[in-house]
Image (tube, rainbow, N blue to C red; front, side, top):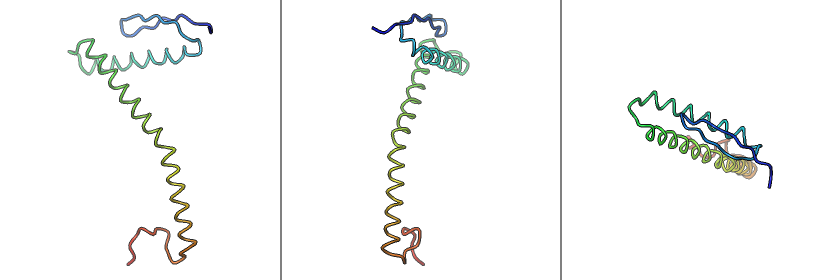
Length: 109
């Protein structure tokens, strides 16, 4: 079993003790920092909200951000491939039909 590291993080007023892979420590610390920043943001924005409500807003915002980023990253290779294929089609059309202009989708006048 790989060596484990005991760390303690502070999430608002809640101490969290964990046993983790040492290589993951910076990610846990950055994650805790992000959670605390978001919590403080919502606490200032919604001073009457309960602690539970604030943590739910933090969780929801981070989940939405994660899904949005994951969706964006998932589509980038597809969009790049489509752009390359479209370019190949346009080149082939230009070779086969030299009378076509650069954009065959524009109507002729």
